[in-house]
Length: 317
Ligand code: HMG
Ligand code: MG
Image (tube, rainbow, N blue to C red; front, top):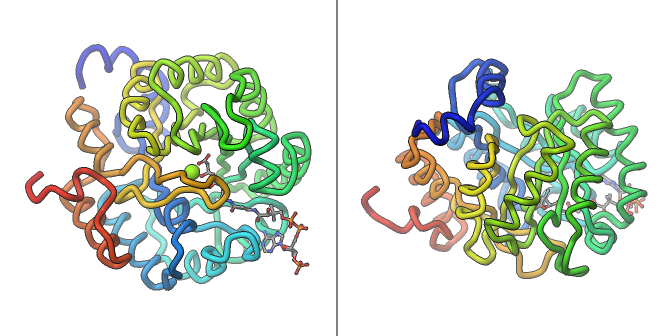
């Protein structure tokens, strides 16, 4: 690792390395099978999803968000959640978190074998109303019993905050609202808070300022970056936030995805482009890049298109 990053890594990184019992500098949370495939117009069969997740696990990714137990009326692409989660071979090294929007979703997830769940809300009332049919305050009330039950059951728990750098319906989102919602989820008992630039409107200085403000209330070691790449800014934003001390980054293989309730949103930063940048910075991720690129090309081929990543399109790494 380069000295300027070594200093920033500090205690947070050592704590995480101990927690995961594995020495990586940056933990990547792969979200393509959920955030990516929830947005596919064509139905992707469950066996293809399972194969994708298992290929990603074989690449060395430590955490792979597998699916979501949301209402199939809202997101039919995730109606096979139980089949997908239930079809995965348990791998001690890999965790398979799943999204749950309410108690009903949590019960379905636990019945299907989940031991790691993620709840979600946004820093924008307008977005929440379209995505989960209630405003911020009501969403936090809805999530309170979900979080309490998940903790009681000993599940690992992540909380997402969407629209941290802007909202497709409201426009600007106040940093104070991002801080407030993040602190509320952390205070309820979410181990990790993932900060979502849902529509990829952020730029590095804005992303860095937002992260610094949230880190004033929730320790940096508990924060993750979840940056969609709609305007090509995701890698630059991540670089700035790593300089700021962030050590967990969400990414989507082949840049799959978007959000069904954020029109025009494109996928998260592509995992292979992220890994290429991080390894170039001397930061270890534990991920095997050639196998990951092959996986990006494989799933893109299955979906009948070119990878959205840069690396997926070059023939020589
Ligand atoms: P609602 O319609 O207000 O809920 O939706 P409801 O409680 O009135 O239920 C309506 C019907 O759905 C009922 O069925 C329920 O049983 C059923 P009916 O009686 O009409 O036959 N239902 C469920 N079925 C299965 N599983 C469940 C469930 N819940 C209710 N869990 C609700 C509210 C939150 C459920 C709905 O709005 C929803 O599911 N929204 C999810 C939308 C979504 O998945 N968006 C994408 C994920 S978020 C994202 O991508 C952002 C992120 O990546 C971060 C970032 O990028 O910023 C995380
Ligand atoms: Mg997302």
